[in-house]
Length: 93
Image (cartoon, rainbow, N blue to C red; front, side):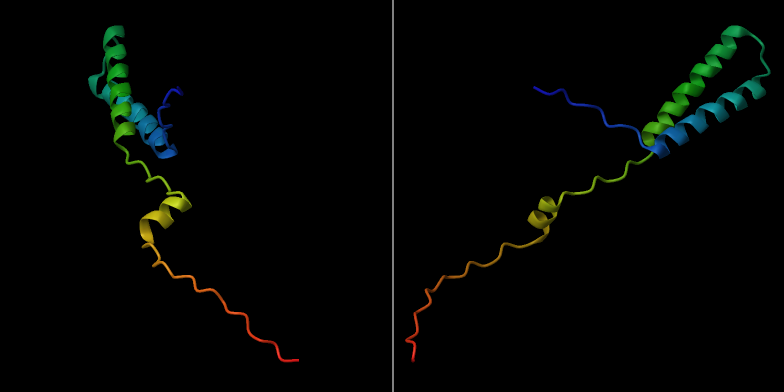
């Protein structure tokens, strides 16, 4: 049985998450004006969590439907036509 794989993050998710980590960590470090190691580590951890939350909340694009799904969902079933045999016409030579 194949193992289900997690969907890969999109480029937008990676960019928004990375920017959030960098900017929020920098802002918190500048605002706190700390030089203590444990506080810096805590601020870095909070920045990572914020970046993860932002990356997960970026909306994903809808997956494209396959042609068979498009045809099956959008087209009404065609009415059945009755087959009528073609009669052979008499050839005149």
